[in-house]
Image (tube, rainbow, N blue to C red; front, side, top):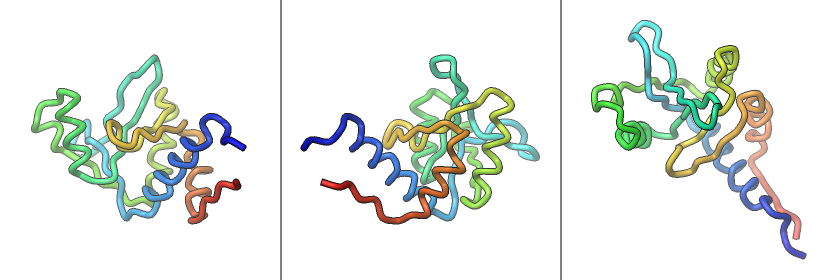
Length: 131
């Protein structure tokens, strides 16, 4: 019996989020002032999107590929993983509704409203696919 379309992709995305929630920190390209930095957000297909990264190197590479000036692309916000959900949920009021993990490499995306649920699922370290 073959897998339903998209099932393998869903499992891969959940695995990417599990790995991300296992890190100490997530990284964001910092915007705004040093006193009140905010994560870099962009508009894609009329959706507000925040990009998060699993390493500083991936964040800097994405910033450069996106055409941000080097001095802006090297300003990063490092957020402890246990504070990420609370931080990001506040941006939904501003019209940001999507989170992308390591855009350009993993491209695992989810709606911000689902982030608390994905965090709970990520705590389950074993993903199995019945045959």
